[in-house]
Image (cartoon, rainbow, N blue to C red; front, side, top):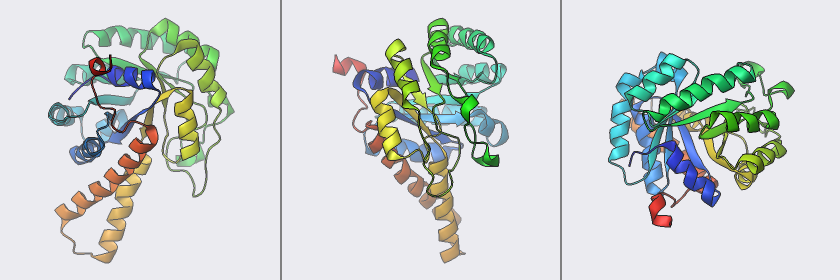
Length: 290
């Protein structure tokens, strides 16, 4: 069933769990994620990163087939544009059929971030779509640009942002970083940031950089009000590692089987995160819980 992210996160917010948002970049990865959600009867968000859409496979070729998969699925599925930073591109994705978009203007001063996001929230209403935004800024493991002191979300800024933009959910920077952490590294989270914003706004809040964040950090985040968790690196790493081992053991392996089996490896990672997020068996309609 194809729905907006707002519907999924409203229920998650009511029942204090999180919905997984998995970065996909082609039909195979989207299919694997949807199958994982179906096997655990969980709602799921297909995150399509703007950078991937622009450099790998464009939304013109991805949106409608993934939407059809969602419409034919028994579980609730949203398609969300991840880190949409170009206003025109975000609007085109809404026109193409995305049920949700992230308008990421976090690189701008707060006033400009508010202005851009507020306008996108109004624009998205035309499509009955939801909008995610970000206050603060996450670093990236690539280039050793880990999240540092100046990147953390200021709770007062976030509270003001939420009230002025009427955004549907907000991504926070409170300790995670995009990418694969070094072996054995677990980031320190500043949970007081989440707690203060949640208590003031009761809005669904978002953790980006969920890969490698650690089970304890994720559980505590959900307890304090995180309702959406983004994971990309762990999902893709599982597929990459499978490909490496499979080719090493059998260099002449049939290519279609190789790709299919790598998707199975990725699916197992998604299922583990669904279990951790508390969203297993949560794919029921809001009316059914009234």
